[in-house]
Image (cartoon, rainbow, N blue to C red; front, side, top):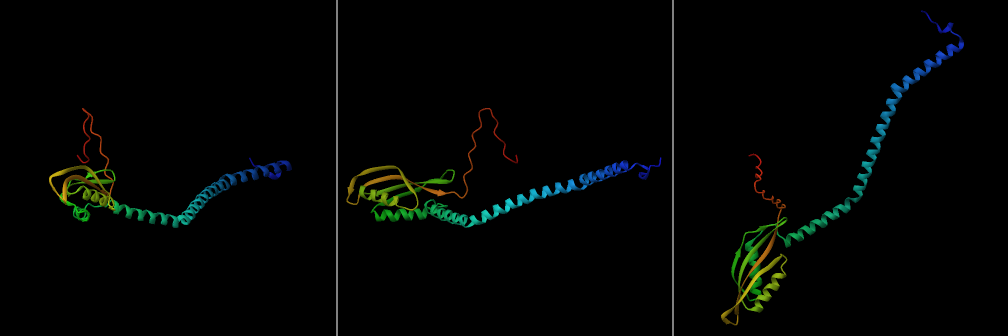
Length: 207
């Protein structure tokens, strides 16, 4: 059937033109303008995220001198801590130091026996058995000088005995445990709880 717009009444021609125009506009909006709007919205979201990251970068850059100062302060504190808690134990160095203060206090070190270290979470305790000879005054002066060491040394298990035949320079013998501390490079691994009775022990990896 042949239908010509020219044969339609004028109002029908206008209606048909309006319908075609609305259909074309709808198709244009649905197939072209909506995807463009969605793409623009996504790009605006990305732009806001980038601006937020840039602002964070500017804030971090402004705080960088402060962070560097904090790092330098922590490094200084770490070096100071290393003098109090050395990273390695050195029996010869500690013996020299104790021998020096013992000589200054007119005290004699008769015995120096290091024991195995006891590992804690961040440090290891290193007990050393000492046998000393001198007077009460010498002993007190020795402990006072040891207490002023940069390196921490704790004195425990002190046992003092008077001599049966004392002289002016030697009236007592004393034994004690001098415990110093060593800073560990890495924290000690946490100890696993023992398996309960009847519970199989965990298998080692690779078994």
